[in-house]
Amino acid sequence: MKIRLSVFYGLFYSIIIFVFSLFIFQYYVDGDQRFYTPFYNYCLDGNFDIHSKFECYKEMVGSQEPVYFLISYIF
Image: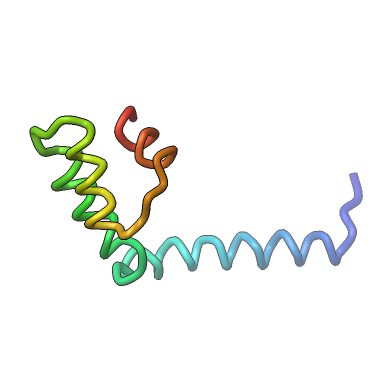
């Protein structure tokens, strides 16, 4: 089986960048994680009813996406 050199280089560099990003981005916690981590820890783990959890979600994340909230709530 013969692989073209351009395909080999593309795969090789893609794998190197992917591994590098796994190593570097574990230290980055100032993006969405700043808002979603308190949502997961406080809103979903609290002893609230589903309406109160959705209100907490809207307050913590600043979003009103009921589908995402329900998926997070169920799983």
